[in-house]
Structure formats: C-alpha cells, structure tokens
Length: 395
Length: 229
Ligand SMILES: Nc1ncnc2c1ncn2[C@@H]1O[C@H](COP(=O)(O)OP(=O)(O)O)[C@@H](O)[C@H]1O
Ligand SMILES: [Mg+2]
Image 1 (cartoon, helix red, strand yellow):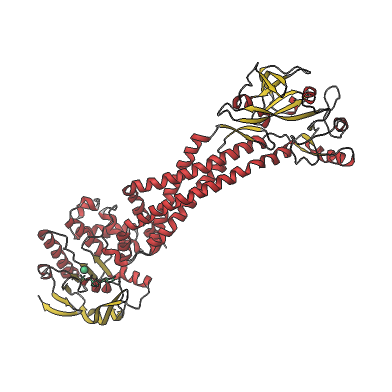
Image 2 (cartoon, rainbow over the protein chains, first blue to last red):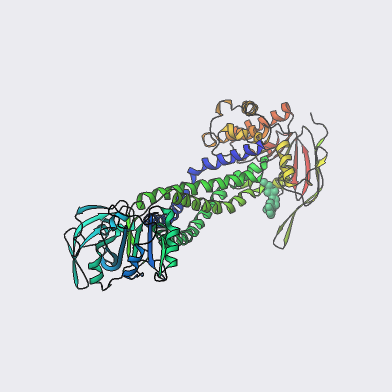
C-alpha cells in the first residue's frame, strides 16, 4: 500500500512540476473554467441577493391579511373596508397605549417609472398607508425630508427607488395619471422590498386611484407569534371574511421563490458554457498526457502500475480546474458582489436589491469547477493509465 | 563467470498484424543466455533487435513459443505479474536515456525503489551508492537538461542497477553519444558485467561497441548467427 502511495506521489510530483512547461495550454483551461464559474456566480449572486432582500422583508410577529384567490400577491388583492373593522376585533392583536389595535390597512398600486441607467420604463409600487405603517417595519427611518401630510398629494420614497429611478429626488414632482405627487421625504427599511416603494396617505391613494373604501392588505402586530393559530381560526369562523392570513415572513418567503428561475437559468447557461470549457479542458489534458507518453511508458517499463498514472493526470486536471474555479470566484466577487439591480418582484413592480455572493454560492462555483476538472481529466487519465509499454521508444 | 541459463528462448514466434497483412519477424527463434553473459545483438535495421529485447524484458509478448527466465516461463504471466517481474529482475537502458525531465538525478534513480518496501533512508543510501558506481556522486541534484548526454546515460544506468536486477537490457545505449563518451559507457557496462555479475543484452549496430561484449549475435531474416569476440 505504501509502495502505491510512493508511486502516486512520484507521478503527481512529476505532473505538477511539468505544469509550467505547458503554461499557455494550462492557462487557457484555467481561464475558461474561471469564465464558466464567474457566469454561474453572476446569476447565483442575483438570485441570492433577491432572495435575501425579499425573504429578509417579513416579520414573524406581523399577521398579513390578503383577499382570497389573489395568489398571495398584494397587487391583485382587494378587501372591503368593512373587513378591516372586523379584523381589528381579532384575538391576539397588540394594542397601543390608548388601547387601539395596531393594524395597518394598506392599498397597493403600480405606477410607471424610468430607470436612471438605460432609461427603460418599469413599474414601481405605490403604497397607501396610515400612521401605523412605519411601526410595522423594523428599521423604518426617514433619511431626508419629512413624513407626508395626511390628506395631501405628498409622498415619501424608498431609498432604492431614488437610487434606481429618475425623478424621485427630494422636492421633485411626479405625475401619475392625471395627478401630481410631490416627494417630501426619503425613507429606508434596509435590506427589504419596502425600500423599493413609494408611500402616501391611504385615503388619498384610495380616492385618486378609484379604490373606494377597499384596501389590498391589512397588517396587524401580534402580541406574540403564537397567536397565528387563533387568528386563523377567527378568520375561518367568520363567513364575511373572504381573506387569507399568513405571517408577513411566510408571505415574503413564498414571494422570494419567484426569482428561482434566474438561478436555474444561471445553472443552465453555466453548464452550457461548461461544455465548451470541458472540450478545451479535455484537449489540454489529452495533450498533457500525450506529452508525457514516453515518461509514462518508461515508468511502466520500470514496473509502475497504471493507477499512479491515472491519479497523476486526474490531479493535474483537478488542480487546473480548481485554480480556474477560485479565479472565477474572485473575479465574480470583485465584479458582481454588492452591485445594485432591480427586477420584477412577486407582482409587476420592481424590487431593488444587491447582488450577494455568500458561502453557498462560492461552494457551488467551486463544485462546478471540480466537476469540470473531474470529467475533463477522467478520460485523459484513463489514456494515461493505458499508455502502451512500447511507447518507451517514442520521440 | 557465466553459469547456468538465465534466459532460454524456445521456438519463439513474433508476428505483427498490419491491416490484412501479417508481418512475421521471428518464426522459430532459439537462444540460451547463461547467467553472467554479456551479449551484443547486431543486425540490420528492421531485423527485430528491439522486438527481441522488448520480449526479453517482458515489455512485449511472443506470438508463440516460450521465454524462460531462471527456469520459469514469463510469457504466461499476467500484466501485473509481468510488471512486478520487471521491477524485480530487469534494468532497462535506452538510446535516449528516458529520464524524467523534471526530476533530479537522485529522484530519477530512486524511481525503481518506490516499488519496494525499502525505507526512505535505505532508498537514499542505495541511490547514493548507485550514483557513485556510475561516477556521478557529485551531480545528484542536477536535472537531466543540466547534464551532458553521457552523464544522462550514466544516470539511466544507475537507475537500471539501483534495485539490483540480474538482467540489464540496453537498446543502442551509445547510439546518441560521441565516440569518447560511448567508450566510457561501454566500459561501465563491462564493469557491471565483470564485477557485479550483471547479465547484459545490448543491442547495437556499431561493431566497435559490440567488441565490448563477450559474444556477438547477428540477427538477420529472423535467425541468429553467432560470432565470438
Ligand atoms: N508495434 C509494431 N507493430 C507493427 N510492426 C512493428 C511493430 N514494432 C516493430 N515492428 C516492425 O518489426 C520489424 C522489426 O522492428 P524492430 O524490432 O524495431 O527492428 P530493429 O530494432 O532491429 O531495427 C520492423 O519491420 C518494424 O517495422
Ligand atoms: Mg531498434
């Protein structure tokens, strides 16, 4: 057994010390694997960043009520004003100092906006809210200007909207439909989708967007998360309430899945590119094995087995692909990590988020690289193991 | 110092298939090489000298007949048995040295010992001795490209003898060397034969080189013709 390891050690050392003599071919393999990995990571970073923002949005102790049959989207949901009053009587809802239940009825409409980069048009969310809305969002803060005055066409805008879209700077006026809205404040709820929204007074939004007394959703602060069961039972027991209830966290966790497709697309693209890189890697490795034919035959003549030759070639391939994988990870990190993007969220409105490369994405990239190295090295390694003895005379 | 037969070829056939054609190199080759012999195999190009040497060394198999080494047939051994047999019994010396270009002389010479159970310290000792025998004790850290052709062939000879095999097989060992260097190498083979008792079969097309052997065999049209030197 130790003799086998000695042989493997010798062949691996020989292989690795021979790498510089095939510098350009080796570099080509490394770079092509790096490109594949960087491509994959771009998409994974996008999916991860989006998921983090969306899934990071919800709170455990906020119950979220939506109209039934709205597939869980606030944009499609509508609830009569009467439902809001009934829900205020639900059990388990926290009350403020003056004994009023802490509930936040909210309307939700899409309005047009123009991107700063490229000038493309997109929809952003305009949320009609009441004084209870900020308290429902941990981390809410006005960073510039002031809160809107109730009853006016004033709005406050999320920091993500200001970053990504034109015309939402403090003091600016925007026209939605026939009405002008004035930006009086900028707010942030860092790392959440609310950062990508416009907020204004609920009654004004209801009127100007012809919503009547209906709202899209109601949020309610729970006395503790354990109250969800009681609230569900309350909603189910009242035939007037055609609504669904989840914790806000559950709601956004399911919305986060809407960008899973981008992750699948990333894998598909990376694997397609990977096939190209694999062809290159196979070529490089066959050439490397070919270049060592005489040495491998000589070792076999001396009495070495085929297995050390196999391990040697496979090691070379794995080393090259690992180097490519790490290069790809570093490149992707430098290029993509933290860049801001916006894309469609669960509904038709934009969510602004940052690309995020975390440990899971790095592992995926390195694993892909190693799989390429394994396949790219396997067949050449078989050839190495079966080098004909009579190649000792090869020139 | 020649004793009983180390190698015996009986009715050896060797044929190569090339498409539909069959090329017959040997039809009925018989040969006995006693232990301690030093044989020079000569003959025109393409007469089968290398093929013969490869069969003697267990690198190639006869199509028919038998090759006995120290009384037992080697042509029946499996690939891995043959591999172990080579490691234990044969040292190869090639025209173009066949050293590992990225390894030092020491590492090159050590290679056959990696197949043994020797400890690193014993291996080191053996490698040192082998390099001293070929007069390269002071070049142990050099890589092949830092050595002359003659020095490289000495490293190859050290590698061939380091595991102490009975049989040395040399295919045109001086074919790539100038006259003076060739003489040094041939004298060294002679010394290995005379003082260390190695049985040597050397292929050469150079009559002057063949004179260093105890006897010459001329291979032509698949047959031997012997001339004593
Ligand atoms: N692997 C092989 N396949 C087919 N023919 C071969 C092979 N090896 C050698 N030959 C042929 O066998 C003959 C003898 O070759 P070889 O033993 O190399 O001759 P020598 O060493 O005497 O020059 C030549 O005609 C050569 O072409
Ligand atoms: Mg020949």
